[in-house]
Each structure stands twice: as C-alpha cells, then as structure tokens.
Length: 160
Image (cartoon, rainbow, N blue to C red):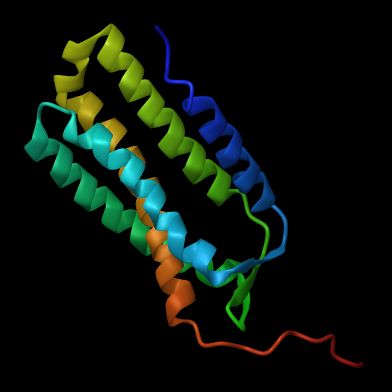
C-alpha cells in the first residue's frame, strides 16, 4: 500500500524551504506568520492516538517549550523588519524543525499501519508528540518575535 502520493511533493517542498532558510534572505512577513500552520499537520496524528490525556498534556507542554525557544532564537536571526518584509540570517533550525514534524508524523503513520498497538504506548506517545509539538511551537514563537519587533530601516554599511 505505502504512503499517499502527496507525501513526497510535501517532503520536496519542505526540503526546498528548509534549505533556503540556511542562507541570509529577505522574505515576506506573511510567510513567517503562516509557518505556524505546519503544526496543524500534527494535530491529526495526536487525535489518532489512544491515550488522549497523555497526548494532549505532552503536546501543550512541549508546544509551549517550542514557542519559548523559537521566540528566543528568532531574535538572533531577525536582522531587519521593513515594509512587510524581514531579513533573516541563515540557520538550519528551520529545516530541522520541518523535517522533525514530517518524519515523526511519517513514523507515527507507519507504526499505525504496521504495529497499531504501539500507538497506545505512553512512552511512544510522549516522545512522538513531544517532538512534533516542540518543533511546531518553535514556528509560532518565531512569528510572535517578528510581530512584536518594531520596523527598522534597512541596514547600510557604515563609513569608517
């Protein structure tokens, strides 16, 4: 049977976005505000787990940690905010977070098809949900940092 066909174009798109994030770039602010929607991919995986109480407690705790970490880290990467765009330093965390969300969801789906009883294991739930939620939350934290940062003028080289 295998994974749905749409999984592979999604993976390719996430890889392209993540690799672009490794370079200093200017992007529309709306892109930063839309990245937290990647976390919606994870909600389906969490809803499908048996131990909902454990899943949601871990999800919200790890999501909060991700928000905090993303907010803190974005300060380092946010170089300028101007006219509906942001200039961001290159970093590898974006690719790592997107790949974490993708591959953990892929693994949960595979486990559900191959060994469904593992989906009720508290340890499996805690690790998989924790990883997904922390990575997802980091995008909301980064968006919040951009939102609360005042616009700045484009940086110009200083004469020495």
